[in-house]
Length: 181
Image (cartoon, rainbow, N blue to C red; front, side):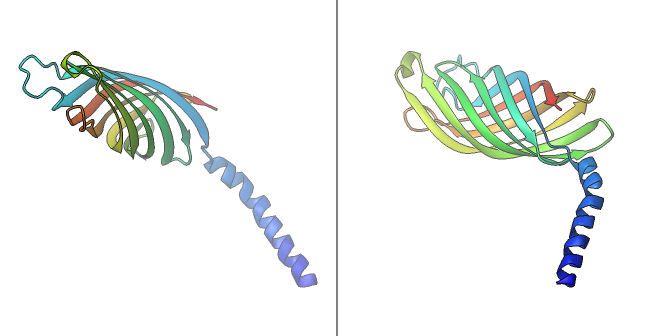
């Protein structure tokens, strides 16, 4: 019985001693942001000479920083509307960041998207919803404790493809995020 109490005493002491160190390592926080950029559509309007395949794109996102390196994000992307197709996407991605300097980090993103594409003009009435992988790379610059600037490139391959042309959409964007601490 004394051995069991001693073991519990050692375990409690270890937790008490480790708690301050764990608190210093903890970076768990929620963040939100918005980015504006340019979508590049490939194969958006085959056979049309006047197809504008670069249009404005917008992303809003929220995330949870799990550790100094890993975060999980959910986002909504308005990928624009070149020619006869407009598209949006919801995404769920994991983000892994590597600090280069004190305030500058690079990151990679990998996850899934749910894309919605809708046709107009000659494609009027055509609507598609599909799922696929999404991935990207970017850089983050911390301005202060709560505010950071961010720039990235992200791909949404194989959007559409049944009643609409199969499209690969890339979004190059820049914006800011706010950490709620």
